[in-house]
Amino acid sequence: MIKSIMSTKLFIALSLSILLLGFRLVSHNYSSVPFPGESRDEYSFSWLGLSLLNSGRPLATSGLSSYTHQYKYINVDSIFQSFANPNPFPLDYPWFDHPPLFGFIPALYAQSKGVRSFSDTSVAIIRRPMIGLFVLNIALVITIATLLFGKTSALLSGLVFASTPLFVISSRLVQAENFLVTLFLLSIIFLRLFIVKKNNYYFWLAVVVAGLSTLVKLSGWAVSLSLVGLIFTLNTPQKILRSVLVMVGTFLFFILFPLYGLILDWPTFVSVFLTNSGRFFKDGLNAFTQLVTHTNITRDFQDTTVLFGWFSAFSLILAMRSRYLYILVPLVTYLFIYLIFGSQGYGWYKFPFYPFLALSIGVVLNRALAQSKLLVFVLLLILVGGSQLHRYVPPEIFTNYIWYWRLFCLGALLSLMFIKRPKSIKIMSLSVLLIVLIINIYTVYAVNITSWYEIK
Image 1 (spheres, rainbow, N blue to C red):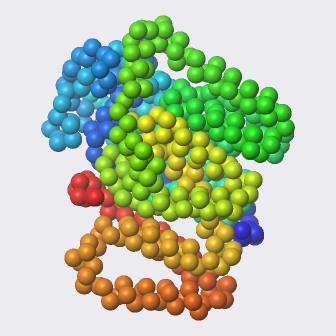
Image 2 (tube, helix red, strand yellow):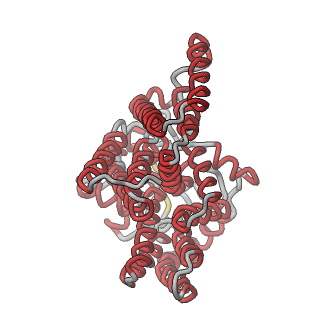
Image 3 (cartoon, rainbow, N blue to C red):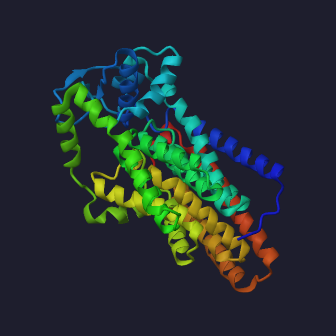
């Protein structure tokens, strides 16, 4: 890797610039893309939090058969004048689809803005906390990479996470997985600090965060399992005791959810749990292939940054170092949770992979710069940049520029064959990185309410 010689002030300035870029990108058209109502979970989480704050009764909308639904026309975001989903909302009490913790985030913000009724929970309001959460997650990605891999990898990882269109648009949604990303990253940071500083304070912070993750969504168990995996693979002192403490501590938090169900309505709680566990596994044995090659949010949204990220993660396995485990163990752990939980491959189920894929890409790009591997950046341009541009240059238009493409391919091949000076390779690599960044920024700004429904 490149030994970073940049000053702390420059690093902070560049980090803040990346945070500002992420803020600008995620804020652009945040209330219209994705279209309001495409995922009714956004309203459901918000209504859950509001009902708990206002009356202590968990009331929200669900499509599960475990409830006796009361159908209501709640015209939030003028949804019944749009084409997103014209059916009435099935309102259910007590609502047990997911643990309740995440619902307080959009609800508390909405209440601070004077929202008291469900019909006032427009996405323009409830998505605003998600903007702040995305900026926080960028900062956490940069922090992890700084602790593990140095400043250059940190900036590259943060830039990838902050500018990739799929990551940016996904982060606007009021989905529990976006908060799960925050807790996942925090737990890894605390564990790393515990290992480096030998201070139990950080260990217990990691345990608390892991426990809270299970109250955000049941897939949050991946956080505590990742901590256990890291404790064992890194040969942490007292690894058996530490692992037991992580699992017991997490369970003590998790048990609050069944107790919550026991107090409110245990038969309904059990029925919802069984219905969720028996949901149709749409992707079947093709689940991993779909995860790697098929990207979606509320609809299909092709972004091959994910594929490049998986390639990068695989390359880290081949060049194994102990610090890579902080990326690989969470990826593998959440992968198995993802496969075990099954059901349909909704876009938000994949969100917790994204920061670790961004970290993988940042580390690989840094290595490529250090080792003068121009091929990595050429592949980045063709795979990621080409995929993004394909939306705006379909084959019938591309045919008119075919000779430019052929000359580009020839030039790329000749560059790989004959350019050997490290300085020249570094300049070309950074130029490619800048081109891909510009393409990503253009893509985010180009996706508006009209083009959203034309994207394939």
